Image (cartoon, rainbow, N blue to C red; front, side, top):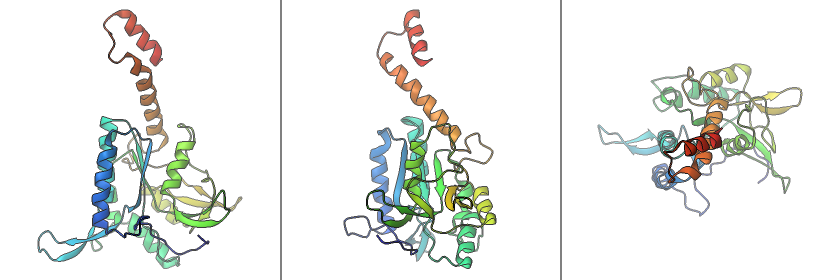
Length: 272
């Protein structure tokens, strides 16, 4: 597509059927259930956003009401389940694209992510602090990308790009101060105060490096509690890599006799 500053939603999928958010939730729930036992390093729910809303009914009055879609809860629970039962997997989830690029719109957009307000019950800042998941990463920004083959520019959320980028760098390397491949710049550039607001809310965001006039990642936060050892993406990635290596080394010994000292020494040597 041509370069544009307009927000584009991908929630209708590719088959021409525009699913409601409630239908999309049900479809993702089925798909994630199938994926529980599939070894996965990074996952993205394309077309679903942390702050999505859906049409529903008030549980008390029964009247129609706009509700929080709860994609973030579905995804967070799945990531926890996979980490406990299969292997650690990181999930990247975006916020809805900003509709307008005016200064007022930008301020409101950041405030709805970072500043709780009970008079606005569906704003993400009211429930984002309740998420404590080291396997989940939140990104608010869109970026302008250059297609590597066609050379055309297009604007898209950065959730899938971030997942692919993190998978490409060493586990002990932070994404901080690094550029996405083929990304020219953020669709909009937060000011210093907005970057600080987003960072304090554990949201991984971008800023514009003036010396190269390119967007770079500001930090490497996960949605673990700020006091957690896993608050920075490098720590859980290193833990995941260590777990995966031990699993690969131990796999040949599963099902074999392991009571004799020689077998134990062989297993320890393989893990070392």
